[in-house]
Length: 89
Image 1 (cartoon, rainbow, N blue to C red):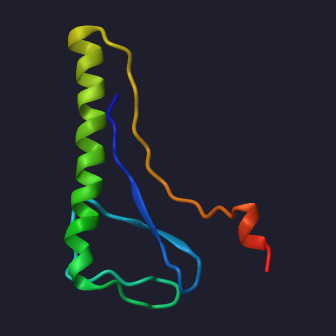
Image 2 (image 1 turned 135 degrees about the vertical axis):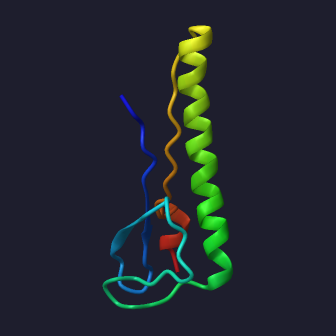
């Protein structure tokens, strides 16, 4: 079995998500739906973060095989939440 780290971006302009190819780092990232472009200085950070998650999950699998340690997997996502005090005016 092979493991593959997948990443996606959500565009705040149109609200749609789209996948990233982590094997090829582009010069520019543009939302395929509304064509808004990500700031170019963020591309390296996005790929670095995805690489860290992939490396951590690789080590979890390695420790399971080599040390018989419990396996974990790291997934990262963000969601918007509203606190009750935000609804009062």
